[in-house]
Image (cartoon, rainbow, N blue to C red; front, side, top):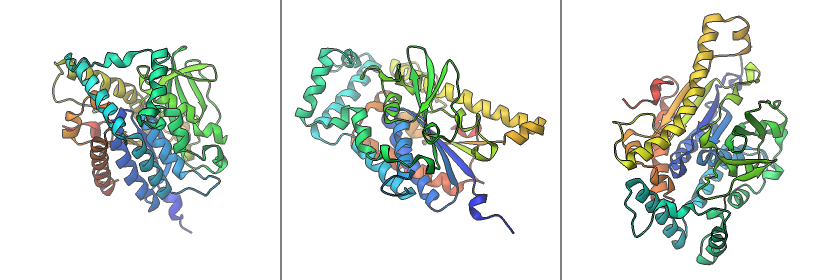
Length: 384
């Protein structure tokens, strides 16, 4: 008797890079991926994200997860993801003003020409200072929603049933990347530890902790804006300093039959530039993109190395591990070229909707061509 359709579905894991509001592109891509999950074109076994990519993958995973109110579904994930992203963008007139101030302040820093006295340094007031605390206490009185400036509160309101997830029934694994700043450790907040599905891996310079909303908040904590998040005695900043996004837990210590067949990276930090940057704005932008890409590329290259060893040596290696196809989903070259570091702080609805619409179009075109007419890593990360 032949295999069932479910048994023949490819197992896919999706990793989403961090990159501020540029992650709106990922919202569009993930929405299209979820539509195909609903049509059972493949099995989504894993999600991974860092910073804004962590927010996107958390909400996707949360919508899929079985909870007290019901089993979860692809449509619930689409709704949760897009509703949460709408809540993350500027909604009130005051929020729109704050978004523009942040964008222009970082833009002024890039060009070294402060506008009306603004520069990104004005946002560098210590987050623990009385000045910062006073500013935050006044924001709600100025028609700024608490979820707009308090990430932990935002996540709690976006995932009201997080404490009622039925962990043993969760089928999609979620990895969230953060950076422990005192000991200097890469850290992964892992849903599998909450579910008891995989043993915790111990490494002095690499932490693996159970998934929590506080861990997701840590993944998106920039020291310019917020104090380090304290979890179990550690102090955490944005995961972009170490992993963008984390991947190895999908393969290390996991039975061969449970590992993904394919790994799709939604890249919002372009691998290439048209030419060497020379202006300050271009240099700042490219530095940030390289930080977001080079650690990721090392993990992807290691996967290809293991693929080559399986092909060359077979034997027990091939019995324990299977080759993994790595693929890239990326913005159009024109959009990637026009974005800057400063635009990562543009929370205006017009800007984020434009990127989300592009993610929808790019994602649908890519999925319609998968698997036979899309490329694979490393060649598919290139624009030319």
